Image (tube, rainbow over all chains, first blue to last red):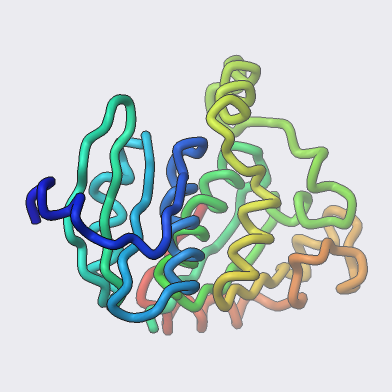
Length: 83
Length: 137
């Protein structure tokens, strides 16, 4: 998905994990995805570089769809659709 | 469900923290985990010892830098990692009976609340044989 497409998504759950280093964002994403329904969108905010690759790989393995990552100033937002 | 087996020989702050981070990755992946706590590791699991672990296995002369960096990065303590992952996935922690005795722990009640049971070496090797991933830390 392009950034323009991503910003039109309806986000059900936002996880702000900017205060933690690896593995904090992954753990917070794992806990939060259990609270939404299949097909709903979750965004994860992180400033940890390792998370950029880690969460998309984890999501694909667990059957969720990785939609894309949007860069912000000093952090980024990862978008997932629950499978 | 993938199975992870860890032989946790080390009882130092740096290696316990590494084990905690790896456990949390396993929890995110819903793995079944069995941790077998061996010799030095058992000291950390004696009831009341969790906050007394302050030695590093490597670069011990940089301990202050290491611990203050972990704090600044908001990294959980090794005990918190273990506790959290036990709540998230199926993690069983077994203390080798010999290791426990070395540090004064004979019975299950001598160990902290992370501990599931006391075991012998045969069970560890069987678990390692049956696991998809085996690590020795």
